[in-house]
Length: 239
Image (tube, rainbow, N blue to C red; front, side, top):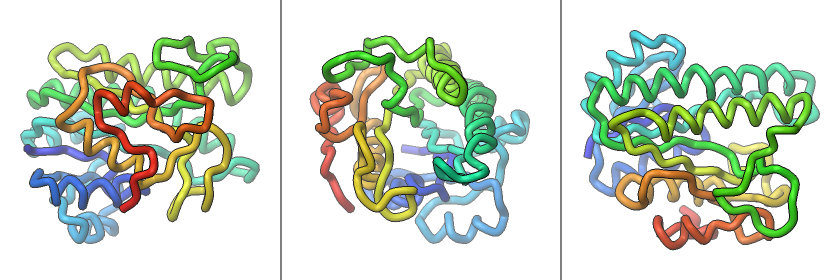
């Protein structure tokens, strides 16, 4: 199949692109920087330089790729928690989730893509006891940065699952760890190794009904039973 991978040069995209290519898919991979195009090509994708906030340019790029599936692995998180730039980074990431996702889903629809896979997060559920499942409420009563994050996630997921004609699958990832992330080891529940995150996106290309899936380790916070059952998700998969 033809795959349009937004964020091919990112921490998950760098792992996902070779997996997609090895599975026989033709991948068009995006980067915002022309300097990174060669690195995307080295992963096996056809590189395209485009900014997700450039709606017209993005629409043209997606149309040229003629994708069956569009994958959203874009984030804007250059500053780790506790660092001076963290708050500003969160604001940029919320804009990406809200406006960037809307642009990407509109482009997917215009290009005739049948399916979209969108990266979300599993640590936005409302406080409660027991493992969270996908139907549980999100933390709409949070404050400060938490409220900003949840609002961005809600807008992103609404665009992913509510675009007519496109089957949207939302992957709610745990806190990522592994090479290239902020953490070398699992930081706190819900956690997820970056390799397993990439594999989950690969599985979602051909498996699973539209909807939301928790993608995390069995650490007591978020249940991934739905993803195991419908996608064949393996929390401890490593490349």
